[in-house]
Length: 268
Image (cartoon, rainbow, N blue to C red; front, side):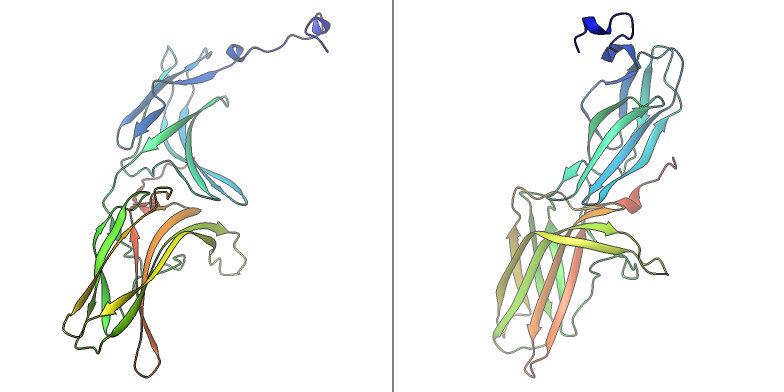
């Protein structure tokens, strides 16, 4: 049907007829203020910053910040939390942001964030894929980590007491994970996962040395280390040693960067 054929019955809506979210910049850093305006509104209305977590079975949105109402000219200013997670994408999951007005208008925005790498201290949290633990005769020490594409993980395996010559195995990976529907009566969360990158190599044991160094470069395509509510990109280190009697000893470290627990959530 042509436009002329609609004459007298209906008019085509023009995008400018309804409210539109217009941002002053396409991105914003965590801890700064996100500004813009809602065009096409006649009265004040709330504006929210929504974090969207996309996983294989759908998407979940969370309100992380808001402005009470736009000003008389439609302008708004939303303080982005210091701990806001950065925009990122993996193979099957993605984390993105959008600004939404009370009337359903929205605009995408990228959030930039920085943080210091640290070890996961949540040894008792039931939803972790891998906690931290030391082996009986050795432990993993991380000295440097840039947990994103093009970064690196460096450290050493520190052993307790003398060893004979031999080898150990180090397994370093970036694992993409997503929350699965809860199936148990106790509500224990489950996770689906897959490797985005995995590197396994042997470390030579020198009998006279008490530690073995490692330094691994990360592929440029990897996302940053992020722990969100329903998706995650986790950087994990596992070291294995087979003892003289054939048993295996293992130590593990999960190195974190950005995590959901650092956010002061706004319920919405």
